[in-house]
Length: 287
Image (cartoon, rainbow, N blue to C red; front, side):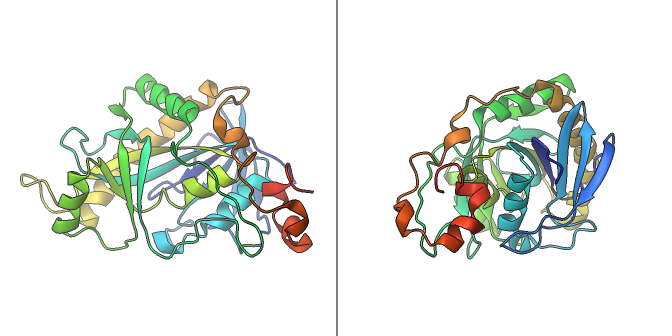
């Protein structure tokens, strides 16, 4: 199967990328079911790239329904080393204005019931997650945003909630009291699974609204979000295209060998079937 080194995961409103050439459509099989949609392979800015719409074309999947394990496993099987993920988020800080972009550096997990690991059933591994986003990719996205004149913020804490409902005011005020700057529904478990798969992962968080804390702004609504999404998607496409020329030729970050000392189960105790199933993830360390 054809390979790609970089992947773009498109969030709400971003279902295709213009400018891709030499396009092929693939549907990798995974032990975790089907990915969100067919994966489009193409060349963008001279870089072979895989594009996957997180919610499926036509926006068919709730955040809780996104098959993140299948998505990340499929991308790993295609040789992907770096993921640029685009997401719509709400702002919890005055300075994060709707239609700004934020390159977050921290996450708080408030999801419930999502499958956040490839491991279990005879294989135990504990990857480090103190820095949930790749610092190298974060710098790339921030520089690309600056090059395109988009108002961008480097760093910020993102609370990931289950949804699909928006926050209550009490929840919103709680998250603000923690010092969080963003609220959204999609960075997890993507970021955790990317780390387990030794894939560099960074998010381009596109601000659509002020959630429900801002007294001078109207309460968040789907209509408001969709209107801001249109402009955010245009900016995101420009940023992603510029980022391609800024990507490192070789990875020097900790993401590249996150599993090196993280597998706790002795190799002989791991079931052979599990070794085969997870070969794209653990094959470098377990034969």
